[in-house]
Amino acid sequence: MRINIRLSFFLYKSRRGKKGTPVYLRIFLPTGEGQIHTGITVIEKYWNDQKNTIRESCPEHRELNKQLQQLKNKVLAVFNDCTEKDIPVSIDLIKTRIKGDTGEVRTLIEALQVHNDDLKKKLGIETSKATVTKYETLRKKVTQFIHHQYKRKDIFLKELDHRFIVNFETYLKTVDSISHNPVVSYIQLLKKIMNMSVTFGWLQLNPFRSFKCTKKETARGFLSLDEIHALRDKEIVNRRLATVRDIFLFSCYTGLAYADVASLTTDSIIRGVDGKLWINSSRKKTGVRITVPLLHQSQLILDKYVPDEKNRLLPVISNQKLNAYLKEIADICKITKKLTFHLARHTFATTVTLSNGVPIETVSKMLGHTNLKTTQIYAKVVDTKISNDMLMLQEKLSVK
Image (cartoon, rainbow, N blue to C red; front, side, top):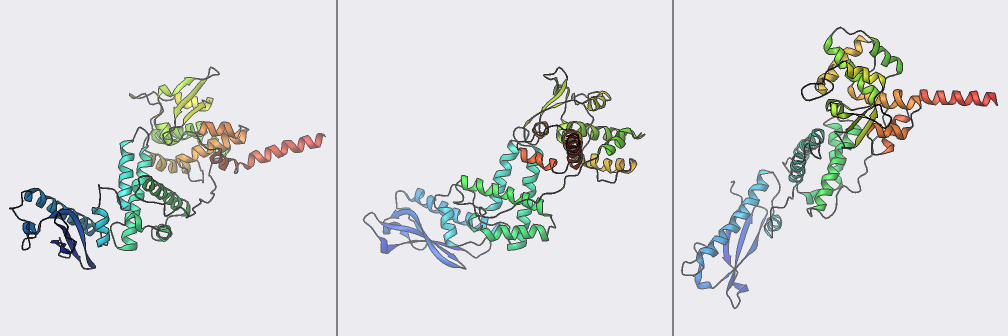
């Protein structure tokens, strides 16, 4: 430890009482000095001024000296912890941490770590791997920001204010070059950490409560019916690419996200209320139940493959590799749009369902959305449906 703190016990003689004189711990820091009451009172004849300890002649000297040493160790632990994290240490800070401290989390990175550790315990039960990854990425970015902005490793929760979140937003957009909507997502996650800290009593109020962050509406890409047919009808010799094409089209006809397609098993296929085959599963991302009738096109794709030893219906590879292969497939099929697996989900919502008159409430349920507003984003871009509806209206008006 660097020599920039000194500790010394002394008798506070001006506060002498009937039961004796209180023992205090004096703390010397470069920024100032202060003292802490040890909670111990002794008769002055038992005090050793040279060693700053209680003499052996005192019947309770062992226990009392042990308590004094424990207090000293606590102060040093607080000091070392702050020094290691590059957090400015003060007398008030030491007093706050020592007085009744039971190890409560008081720094931002500690709060993030507690939250993320709790998430990891629920992994596979209530939490998905993607959610854990998002919060771990947030912790790393907050750590990098604190070092960049304050030249420290951590910051106390009580130091956080509106300016901190403004600077964090600016940092993400400038230094990290992250676009607006992902930045808003990070800030929303950080707000949740603050709400957790308030709930646990580490903060009185969320310092970011007045910070407004709204995502900008973005156009959701999707394939047209002609592009779906181009994918479907193209003869692809390469078996690897042909399999990826089939899995992508399966998502176009079912609306399932990558994680949900990857986890689809024979148990996920049931007989629906109409006696036909349905997909009955839960979204990996939210746990929301999804039921989707199997269209003839999606059934043909399933019939091509034999379930593996884990009864998985389709031979899904990693999302990263799958998206890389989709780029090759786009070139082969002369599709200029950027093919990603999630584009298939958008295509199901727009071209396959909404454009063909499926009610938005039905589409929302099949997609596993918990809020109809999420589905309405897709409805705004279905120009073909609007055109067809207006054409039908025109025909009716013409007849009248």
